[in-house]
Length: 243
Image (cartoon, rainbow, N blue to C red; front, side):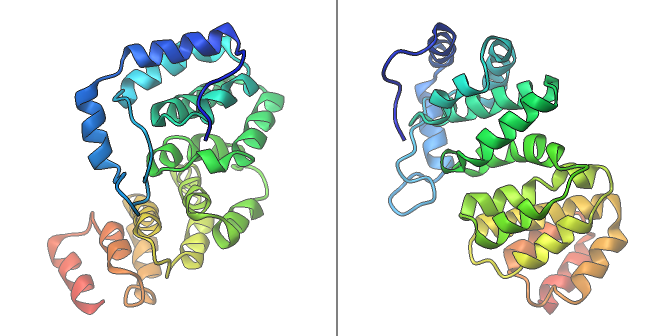
């Protein structure tokens, strides 16, 4: 990833300066530990300046009208984690208020720059708001391609995007993608799949129980724990004992 260089629009420079004015060394140190940035970890080498998500959201709301979707790209390519988060939250704002042309542009930019959407919070705060929203009434083979052939982060995008469908009680793609990712070895995918299954269970427990019936003893325990988190202690104990 490249840091800022060259000639950039004034609004891009202004938004970055605004972001850095909210930085906290203390919170940055906490983020470095929380996101596992050590050697060999999933966030190895990521840089944090210590800006909390609510502050980043506010900056995104303030600056989204001043930037085009393309002008956001230098932020997304920045080495600073909060710059990438800010870029994605600007797109979320622009997508929510944009027409179909703007939305298609943002989706195209999002999918062609997944290299920079490279941490779980970046995925979780953007995928369902952009990709999930866009695919609500569209063909969804894209999600299966990401799940089957994508990088770790693209696979997380595929399952987290379905949160938008779940909120509309549309569970089928989540369940099918959960099957695709059922035996995934990485805990960040196991947690995401378990989370989405839990969201289904919050709306229709019977659907989740039916899904688990033939799979609980094959699922990674992390995935299962996340999926049954809202069950009673007795139910959780039975599933974990049987798995």
